[in-house]
Length: 186
Length: 240
Picture 1 (cartoon, rainbow over the protein chains, first blue to last red):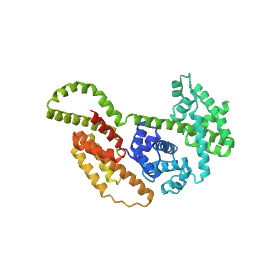
Picture 2: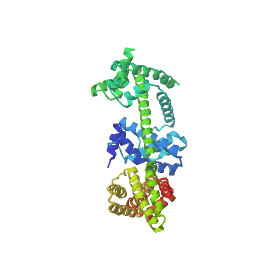
Picture 3: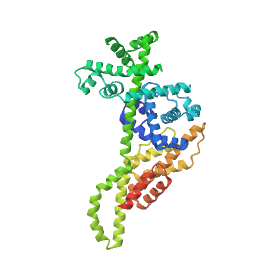
Picture 4: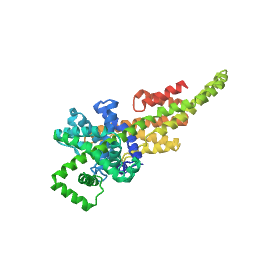
């Protein structure tokens, strides 16, 4: 039987089998809750559930959530993330901000404008990153997501050495940075 | 370019937590004193977080696709399609047996019982592993029943399902907030559906055709989580 600590550790270490198990065990209750209370379609609930998984994973890997500061069960925490994601997607649910469980989430922005700005920026940069073509898409994924070492990336990409990886990765970042700087200046 | 590349690599080492504690503190101090470094850091961190989000979305998406592709109905359909040739071999024997109607009825019932045993096993294989929650007796019983069904200890599993049903019927918890109460109601609904589905699986694994059909019809009618699976099983059984 897996505990909340096991799941948190599984998310932290990108363990696909554990994340998959969390997915299977929580999907039904999560969707039933949001279907009943917000009357959303199955497609909408699929997106909401997956986005909430991503947010929880981010909170765990960034150190915002650990077994030491988890104040409820992980499934309750996960439902709170779902409510917060729902509010972030659709401002007509702004009253959710008063929810007692939501108020416990320490990553929540109190300022609605700040929240909207952050979401807009994230959507923009996610689109940029998601639209990148190989080899940049592969190198950045291996470097930042899979956290592979230079030697491993060189081998996977067929490069002569890690210097080539560094140079190529630098060039990829140079494609993204000016666009992001321009967006920030707007 | 070399200097910029060095700055980028330094920021990466911080973001990827590859720095020693002292080096980390030095970097944080530099961030406070160097606006250009701070600006570069913020841009790089935004990209770093985005690559992670995009990567994780892809992982979750592939988990979702995998999850959908191994739905119980797909596996049961595969079972029936694999057994088509077996069915054809038997059809001649059935034609002969049809001459004696009572023999035929018994044969059909035996065949359905065998099919149900296979379907019950497939349905069990597809079940999510239940979570035992501390101080939640119903969840504990469901988790134990799950293990026992897997071990084919069906009588003991039945006892636990009955006990969980009884607990559910007399559960009258009070909650501090409406949110907690709402969440618990959704949980209870889930328990109820799980228990009915477990019951159907037990009947199917036992080969109790009549009881399994009755339970599946009830699940299909209630339009809950397992309604589609129950409907599909009933229609497959009707065809075969």
